[in-house]
Length: 399
Ligand code: PMP
Image 1 (cartoon, rainbow, N blue to C red):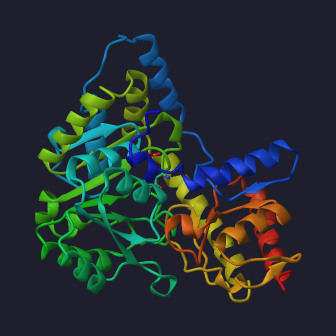
Image 2 (image 1 turned 60 degrees about the horizontal axis):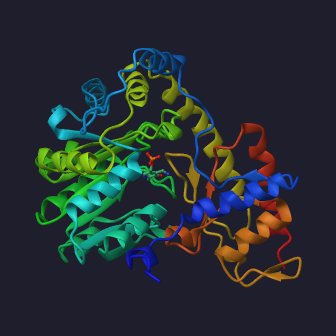
């Protein structure tokens, strides 16, 4: 029998999807399930996005599009970069892909040879690990525990980059922790990056318009414009525009890197579909009230989630300032039991919580931090308070 390629031994289905599927199965069996598992936004884009898609459908040329991305979409993205304070990018610095996940995979393939050093912080978004494994990188993890609010310190980054990894991948706001770096923190990390010229830097900032408390979104390139030569900004319409199924990812960076992603596109996908490109262009260039309004709603939900979690004795939830995730340290539960079942670790905890209370969360080990638990608070608002109350109940019942 022929065998699958060795790399498939390193590729796993996403842990988040596994939990979401269990929750869906229980729901189908008639259980009352509240899902805090998958990070999908609970809103749709504005009507102008659908109008643009319909218009494109009627005028559909039926032809392949540009490998890099439609000019109108690239221009709309450049406009969006300007709103974020990232000026001076042209179409030649940009490329599109089938979601940020695809862009990240293309970048990993374009920038890393097998065995090259690839550094990123824990907790990390699950696919970082899977992409690193599939391309056969030498993975260098930078632990950022709850005691340092899950944030990378300049000293830590300095020590990591001294080992000259080929690529450093940064994520702000963070999935799974919701942490956001302040302007000063970004400036301090940018100073470190400037001292280590041998490393490419990807900044995966797909939640860039979902930042709370007036902290604002900040980027290494704003802090140190010369880093533009090595820093690649990754964006997506999935979360901030409520368009995960449209599959639109974007990047802006050095021309050589945008060209490499374009070459990968020419071999993998050829182009985004015309209708999708038209919808994405409308989202990025049309009224921006949907993302702004959703951000305010998520901030209010964040307050509710953090208050409920920190009210549980022994649970510590650093305050997230962006995205729609909270990542409490729940290790106080380990070694205890619930209804006679021992909770040895985060996976036991998530299973017991789902079984006993019908609440689905993702175990922290899926993100490289087994003391934690990820709560995605995108569920319908009426489910939020009961879901949190069930978590509180569960912890109160631990013996
Ligand atoms: N980066 C981060 C940090 C994410 O959370 C996600 C989606 N969960 C992605 C990238 C991928 O997004 P997309 O839907 O655009 O592929």
